[in-house]
Image 1 (cartoon, rainbow, N blue to C red):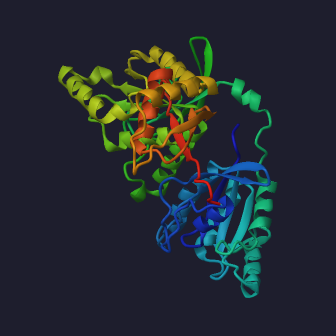
Image 2 (image 1 turned 120 degrees about the vertical axis):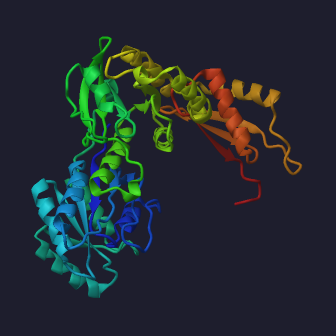
Image 3 (image 1 turned 90 degrees about the vertical axis):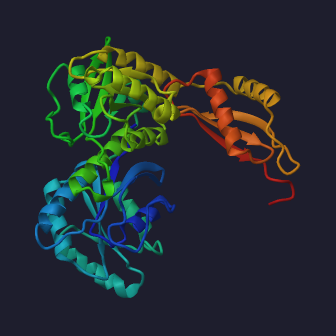
Length: 439
């Protein structure tokens, strides 16, 4: 079920991240008293009045007089493009600036519904200043205080009024084509791979790194089955220093990972595995998605490179050895047909459900053969376990005391040995029983 997306835009230091935290009801966005702090991971799940949506906290743009409008337009357009509605945040204590007006022009062109939030309305006095924001021509300004929470309920009601409903037909989404994101750093051959799969030149491919900017959804038939492929812009090395264009491209990669069920991470086999490659693998794992690793440009590797690659995989990819991998050449089409099996295997692992009975007999065997070490005269025991959810498999262990992190990892490893879980992250959460007499 695709949740509607709300983009929060505005110039630096108007309090966007603080307002996002207010919407989320938790301190998750990075808040610091410096313009332009928001950078990396910026989409969050939010709920209001029983409705779910995604909030995208965009970085404030820092502009100079020269080319200011162009830079604002480029950054704002890309963020707005990917959203269903826009929350435009202005600072009521400062009034309307040239930068605010530049954003308004972009918002008008986008034809997206816009809610105007006049932030920093902490008392009656600033309420009058907020009303001057009518002059922006975006309708009623909602006076809010991200700091104190004042007015945030009315603002959220207005947001829900313009956001489309998430489709009720969840079963259609479940029964629809499986969603696959092709991700990887620029120029590893993601678009070439998509073109090979679709049999047509759909994505713009050029030898310039990072040619693909928009995710292009493509329905592809593999072995008689339909899949939805989401091709994404390559992630850039340092998002902090990226221009607006690249910043939002990396945002969209994150968004594509969130939308997908399984991610095919494309690595360039002819080059050394980089920190950036590992960061993308970690992003997929952290998002809890199924994972397949495709080593592309295999035809460009010689015996020596393959020897080095094997060593790199043993050292760096060891943490992801649960993911199926395929050696491919997107250009020649070598082994591309093997991707289907790897994707299906990863999805099957991701959806695995284990009955509580199976899990607890497994936990009993583990505890009998490898009991938790005694700590401070006490030996924490696993009392009971349950699989709280699948996609990815998430287990909750109820224990008599806190478990050592390495013991939790040991249980996770044994779970993989016992039940497979090919191609999926496995999460193990520990709930230690509170001591009696404590409230």
